[in-house]
Picture 1 (cartoon, helix red, strand yellow):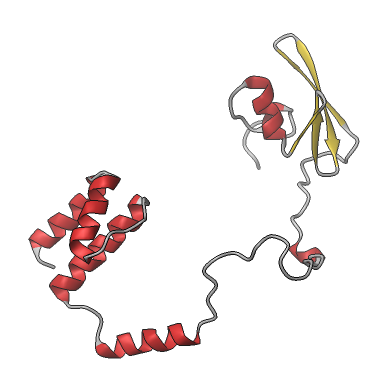
Picture 2 (cartoon, one colour):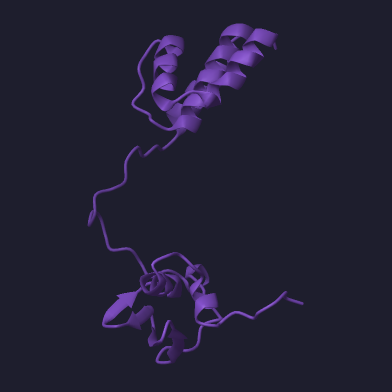
Length: 163
């Protein structure tokens, strides 16, 4: 790779997204709707290398065309409620229950800043002060105002290193 090309590619990540979009339009000959910095850097770098080192061979282009023709592509998600109802997932595909949690119906109690907190473990979530939360971490965040591990906050993790 030519040293100037390597320097130019190495400088791409330091550009702002707006600058990358302008650079993309200049290098590729068309504007992009993307605002994803990583994607823009990769595409610009690829195009710069393709110009300097040579693009795809004609054989590779034919193969890509064949693959695209054979692919069953979906460019957008199906509308909600379209088609038939989704079947129940087999047990092997269901999300496993966290074995650190007590059984549903258990009340977790913790003292925090002079308050006694009580959280009920539900079948799918946690009840705290009349609201249902998806995770213990969400409950801990509601209490403390900042993110922390719900398992640690409510004392469900072993302290110290695991042996």
